[in-house]
Image (cartoon, rainbow, N blue to C red; front, side, top):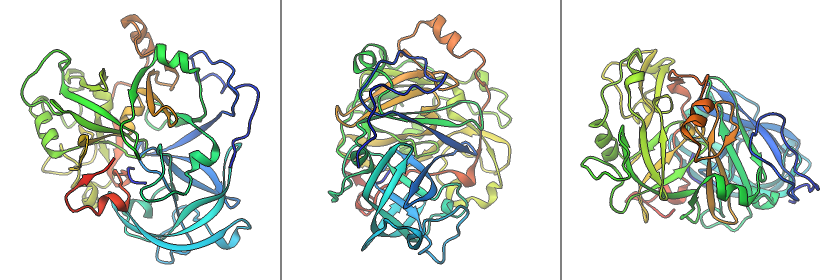
Length: 424
């Protein structure tokens, strides 16, 4: 999605068992590794408590506020438990109503304050928004009831401290396992030292005030764009703005860029039989070339696609006839512009191949190679190390139920702009 008190301290870093392969040294702050449960490979959600009630939420680097589906919404479908302020002993009313606009529809929310807990982390008097009315189709069937914004800064026009600020968390990381149906992980706090990251991970500077956004150049299929300048390559010249977004199910890009990419790739067979012939996707993130293999950008559509008009319409590489068990590139069209150029969203497919660390204090992101089990490995690994890293990794497409796709989302302060210009 793209929109909008103190951490428990300890003397040594708590190391999760058997998942992170990189060296970890003692760091004087709490670290909590949280499981992100996988639903249909397009929704990854974690457990937290609000006012003593356990709620499931998407931990979303593309937004910055906490929104939760509420029992105040009498017309809402509640496929999972909704937040009920009347059951809370810590709820404080504010009553301000506002409109949040998401890629799949708007919602009306009421502001309040609550106690929020994620593992050992606790925030008292945390500002949040209760969803009291919405037209967001995916929420009617979603396995989550909240959107937990973990953007790098304050929300637009709002000086209430974010959850990250109140937790005292300056750094966190996210990775999604590659096997279909497997869970992901979010780590609150540093997993490795700053020196280790600088030496072994790829670094990108955050250039936005409100979003985890960086510069992207030269997107192409099948040919490294580093030393080649040829036609029909998106993000040349001044480049594009790339938001690294854990809350968006696919990759989103401007229609013109997707049209350019369509000239570089052969049609994908409906049964995925030519996946082994498909090219690698290359792109440059803040000066460093990154790649995504076909396993990252090809999806196999499942579910009743004929009923998914609103989602189907934003898919770019779609055939004229909708079918189940059909393969296609996992791209959505989103035509938004910013002061840093056209906007791209690198969503969940990105996190299956890059273990990504976000630091709101240094305004940086660091990318490590992610093994299929999410262990982080040096970015500049040798060819032999990369082969070993990916040994046994799934080679087929990711199965996607289009009805469950979570589109990009922008806060109302952005989406109400009539010229589609976004201040990132």
